[in-house]
Structures are given as structure tokens and as C-alpha cells.
Length: 95
Image 1 (tube, rainbow, N blue to C red):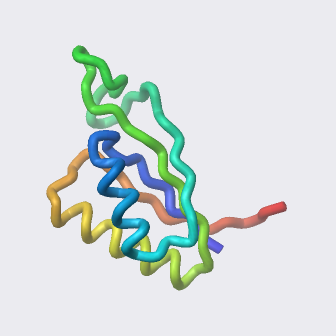
Image 2: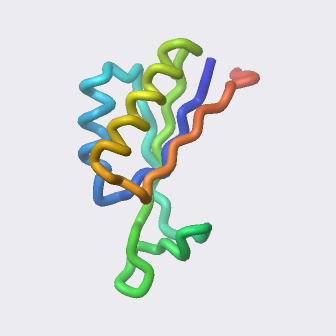
């Protein structure tokens, strides 16, 4: 099992949902991220610190998760989305 974790540009969240539907993602969870800070600065989604992010998580079997990750990354690059970040991690345990 693998986990795809995406910090998605909140302005693109509808497009991300559409991509997940088109790519037959097995399901996903979206958590709004109110604030954070990193290499690209502070993100709180207000006028002073624009750039709200949402956390999107998908869990699937290894091969489908890897293929989904690669396609999401490709589509992110195609639209020039430099804010969203994708991570692919093994799921060591679930209960």
C-alpha cells in the first residue's frame, strides 16, 4: 500500500478533484489547511499571506498509487502549478 499526499493549491482544488475522478482514484480525503510556512513562505489564505493550501490524501495498492502519483505530477507540471507539492510514501501499517 502507498499513500499519495498532496499539498494542493486551494484555488485548484476543484481541478484536482476532477483529475482524481478522471483517473479513477479509489477515493480521497481533503483536509483544509488554514496556515503553514515553508520554502515558499507563509500560507494562510488571507490578503497578507495568500496561497491557501489543502491536504489531499489517497491510499491505494503500490502499482496503481505509483501510476496515479506520476500522472498527478505530470498534470501539475502541465498547468504550471508551482505551489502544489506531491509525495508518495509507503503505508507500513493500517488497522
